[in-house]
Image (cartoon, rainbow over all chains, first blue to last red; front, top):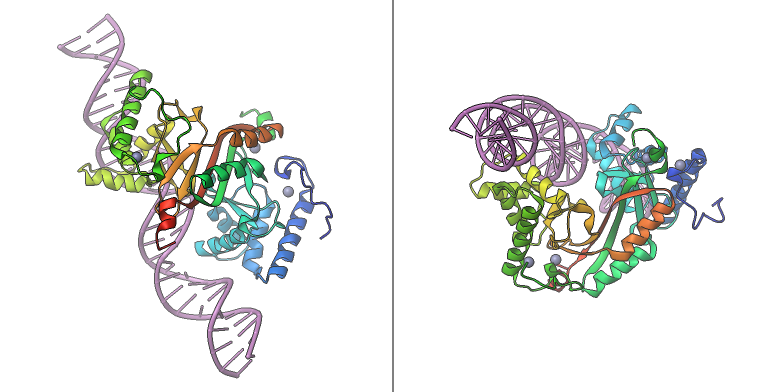
Length: 173
Length: 173
DNA sequence: AGTGAAATGTTATACAGTAACAGATGAGCG
DNA sequence: CGCTCATCTGTTACTGTATAACATTTCACT
Ligand SMILES: [Zn+2]
Ligand SMILES: [Zn+2]
Ligand SMILES: [Zn+2]
Ligand SMILES: [Zn+2]
């Protein structure tokens, strides 16, 4: 609630130098607020997994998350990670990156659950960081075309694989 | 080489009633022609996997393909299926559906390898059939936006999950 | 305090994908 | 023809991703 204008057309932070502490704090606050408002239970396990995802802008596999949970002294089995991730994804606090079988925290946790916004993801194959942007009217037009063919659209995945600015500058590329 | 006009703006066949025998024969002919032209070896294993994929418009997991290979008396191990699928995907004769970890035959095997066309997939969660259409200018505009942010785009995935006309008509929906 | 729904802990297993190496096959060549 | 290199195939064993199922705990609400 501290940001009056939540950066409507700003470039996504993941590939930019930014105040990541603020970035994390604000995302966590948004999620806490949304949970309070919608009567969702942000339990310790879920909060911890959210923190793990927020920690970097990299996509983490469920087993990466699990490893970090264990590193925190929490003797967890796979379902622990999957259940927390399912909760976060179902409520729009995280997204699944299909191309990587991995997860990232949502960059706009304010905008309501799941279907509410139509994200597109830029996935860097160099550093595995993922920036979220809006698929916007482009995705809408593909979806409209599908509907014209009698197809009932439920979810749309747009994932762009490539190389982020930082990784283009690095030697390995 | 028998179709002068390869249905430029026609609705995708997967969800339509169509002459599937013709559909299979024409796809196979295109692939054979492309292989001859580009000096690719369409070996028996690869041809058989292509046939398996062409057989239905459903997305098949690598292990589904494997099972069908085995059903044909071919005592195959997983790498057999993966290698054939990799060949087909690398040369644009099949596509990987990220959302399902599965594969479908390409609907336009004429149009050259891999990056040549920008497909979008409609995935029915009822029957697992997948129809391929062109992502067209929509995907291009998202990709342009990404490039404007300094991101070097390599591949774009557009997958639309929903319910096909047939499955909408069925009771279970 | 009592009750039902939701969340967690735990075991075991299913499904997806690959590394590595040995053997077969096939096109090109002297 | 018979060599040779590259590609394709066969096979073992393994890593990684995801879920079923059931016992137990926690929590909101009476
Ligand atoms: Zn950040
Ligand atoms: Zn990068
Ligand atoms: Zn067909
Ligand atoms: Zn269907």
